[in-house]
Length: 133
Image (tube, rainbow, N blue to C red; front, side, top):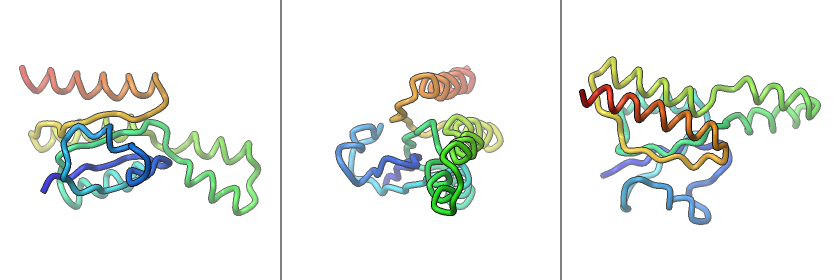
């Protein structure tokens, strides 16, 4: 069975039409991870999925929990900015593929951050070009 790893701290892949971003056709199993740690842990525990959908800006959950504990809005925003991003996840993915001599899974990016989206896509495309030489 095909697996889609959905990296997004905010967008629920089971709601609305978010799965239109999937680079593979259904049916597939959806694994929803919301942080760099969950992304890395999933790949270490299960190997590469068939496909990955990336968000760039992560850390919303961290900021919400901090606000619930009484942290100011400004401080919680700063805390969110310290979280690793989808770009960090893409860098991990490339390193994992290099270390294990693997091809990248198919991917797409649903991030609303245009610069972050371009950075992730450029990194993955550059690795793909390098691997195909």
